[in-house]
Length: 275
Image (cartoon, rainbow, N blue to C red; front, side, top):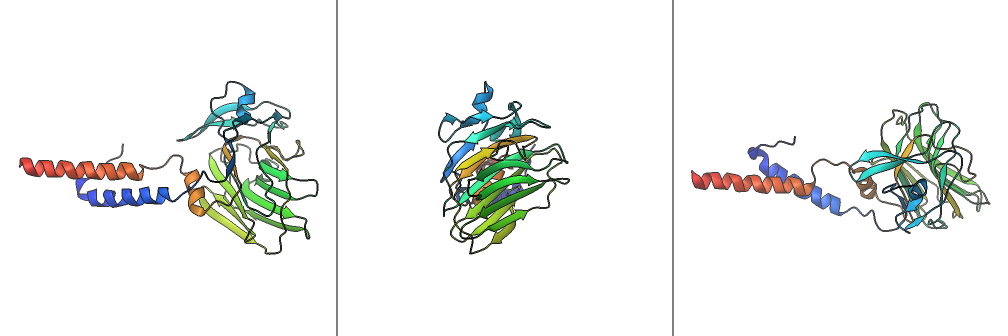
């Protein structure tokens, strides 16, 4: 139970207002092209529902996707992608090519197997070999990794790997952002920026095929475990934007703290008037 003392009311009032202001600066809507929330699924096909396009994207590969409980808060459901040799995945239909632009891939992940030989969260590729991905790097330990590879004008690869162990069978959030203007790649783990990499000579990315849960070849680096709130944007989210995606089970919100403080002040004044 959340408790507070009346002598701390000014603190709660100020903290609440600050938290409310900070939350208002985040934008997790602009540029959103793909979102798999895995909600309201009565069949496996419903787990491919893209809430942005309102279309069920196709699901293929061996095994079966199943709906499971998500990390909580506003992300109540998730999809389990199976174990072992399962290659079940979603073929993304609503994501445009980054070309010379930018993108963000983000998802909640729960991976129970520390010996997973890489697990693709989002993978994009084209025939020329250009790649953009967000994945779990091979374990143990499993670690978050994001990568871009452009073959024009020459092969340039940028990748960032975090040291956080994802194989604790707990929910973690990861996001990879690519700024096509500044050519900067960023990796975020649990709402906080972890790694940054940049190279001004990296060419545009010509990517047309995207998949969730396996590489676009449909067989390699299949995800083992569960994914929730998978998102793909056509822009690089800011630090505060990514932080907002992570805060699905926040502490009492700014509005609640401010309301508690105002109610407490009213009670104090009433007591004084009675006395």
